[in-house]
Image (cartoon, rainbow, N blue to C red; front, top):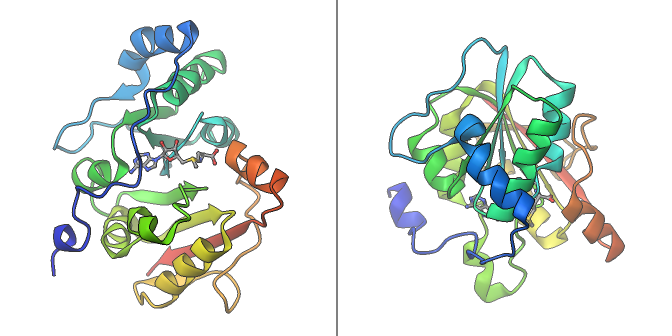
Length: 226
Ligand SMILES: C[S@@+](CC[C@H](N)C(=O)[O-])C[C@H]1O[C@@H](n2cnc3c(N)ncnc32)[C@H](O)[C@@H]1O
């Protein structure tokens, strides 16, 4: 069965929200996007060379985690993907303020970016922090982690590269753990249930703080591509 049959692209993991953009975010998209943004096209992305590693964060939100990881790890190239323009604008302002040369952004569906723009076996890490939980059962089909997505992540990772997910939704955490534990292309780096302690490189994110305020737990899953 092909990827497309298993995850018809009419079902996406996001809903485009108009979202209010501040004048500063709008200006950042106009002025800074040409420097740090990569336009979507169905061809491999032209990435800056010379980095020891390449790490991709999917669903960066306002980019706080991406910026913190990139600042702490200047030898790695950090790629961030999101569709939410105010967040991308905010992230661009953060890149500029911190003078981070090692960050590039995509504003497009991460599934399509993975499928068309990321070279096979080129990533050292794929990071997915607090993906939209789509808590209602009838919306579970919108959850980004599914068989087709696992295929794309597997193809993009280098052997021994890491797929790291964090979520504050227990049933989603359990579902992702079950998927990855059953997928013999990935090796679990966590406990028998598929959960790991939070790796030191993962900063707390806005959605994590929101989840904690609501009394949610947090689950990290760290799996390695065989
Ligand atoms: C719940 S928020 C989490 C944001 C951030 N990681 C955090 O923890 O604060 C999920 C983010 O993923 C983005 N997103 C969802 N599906 C996506 C997709 N297929 N491609 C790109 N971004 C996506 C949404 O726009 C949103 O910004």
